[in-house]
Length: 366
Image (cartoon, rainbow, N blue to C red; front, side, top):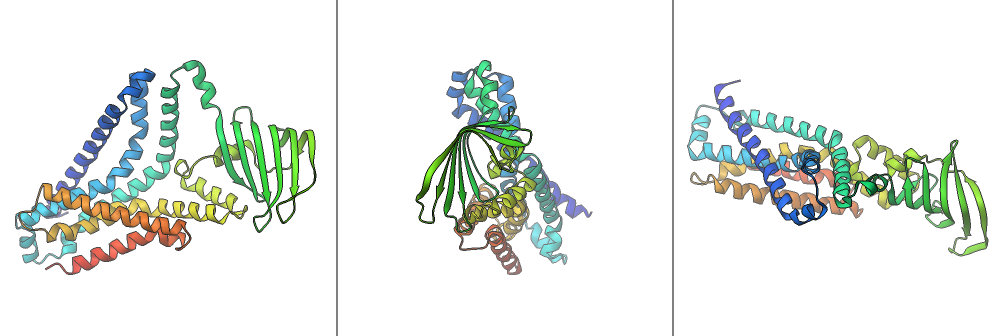
């Protein structure tokens, strides 16, 4: 690596790490002060607070990394431009790519790191964070274990076009209470409704107690009298493990779990839910590369600023550019979830536009 490359990369890495640590520190302080009354109210211990914020570190890292990359890039190249060092580099025959190559490689490495952290650690960190938050709100060790072993208000799409609504699900005992199952045909017309007080998974079968079954015609009207059974064995292929996994929100799943969830939901014919999940899935692949793309966008803006524009001007440019980038991304995600754009295009369109704009602006640099 050339001395010049080390000089530029050292500045970018130093500012990036400084931004990461500063953002994490400020987030913890601001969040702690804003929720200080709740902390004192629930008498949360220091160890519990430490676990709470440590569990949230992967999430914060993923969220602040793109802005840290943008700020470090804009500040470094704005300073080089201010000191006429860019002019000296260009005069020696170096192209913009030669000057920024190692910074782009650094952005790629950060993007790959964000992708790995986002898939391997963020879902588990969010789940752990929610559990610790529940412990703090509970405040009593006597009720804590009981609360955490119950999943409330579970709803999910299952196989054979079934929609499950469960008031309480106990993963440890493999039982559920307050069960409502809606079965639909291929046109999403309701054909059957099953209501049961309790369900227990025994020997690979679900046994429902106090079960009432309603049948419906194509017009949604009840056909014949509802059938009642004190106990009935239901042919439901979903196991307690499936319910425990599928109850999760998309942000609490890794990529493999999301793909499996989409495969299961696809059998239900719920097109809107499937489309939204696919947008979220493709965003898992494209979002981590925001760090690299936003560096590419920051390069022309930093080199187009005036020689006096450093320091606070770099921060202002970073905020404006990052804000516009995330607005554009949010717009295309919303369009994709509305069905006006294919899920993959919705998750990647903002990146394609920003890359094209960045390359256009770089090509126009003197």
